[in-house]
Image 1 (cartoon, rainbow, N blue to C red):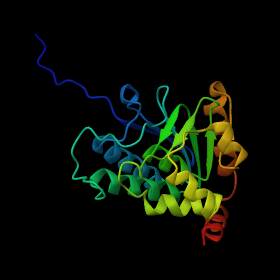
Image 2 (image 1 turned 60 degrees about the vertical axis):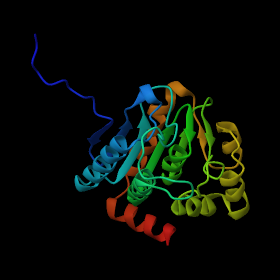
Image 3 (image 1 turned 180 degrees about the horizontal axis):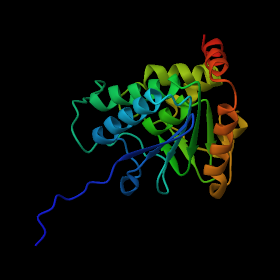
Length: 218
């Protein structure tokens, strides 16, 4: 009988190739829902990528779903209108994504709540035709993260950002593409297109990439 320790799969994977870091959500059996262990590993992976001098991020997910949002099955101190640890970690992850001078999110399947927040934190969002996006926070008794509201206001304008965050609509990739918020890419080409864009960003001098990002974000 084996007495060895059972190996627990990593919930988040990070690979660096030159100045490009690829971070993969790796909880496909739960549609990459954001529980505290996954979020902690995601924070660690993003911090590790920056410490290893990656300037460009590709954010992707294993399995048929990008991210089904916060995993509410475990108590993390949340109460109606009072976000807990998950929310604070989601905010931290979004800030870490936004800190990269260039970033590309590759979305397949659902990107719901915190999942959409992660994608919205990237400079460019690519979406497979089957992808869909939704913010259910208000219906669940929470405001969306402040940083997410700000990012959507900057990219979509205040009126459209309000609709996206408040209406709890299921929006398709094509609908968001018409609003200029995503680029639709055939699912088999999603990873290739994400890496192609990342390599184009990485070809720019790193100091100029940082300065351009700082100029555009004020």
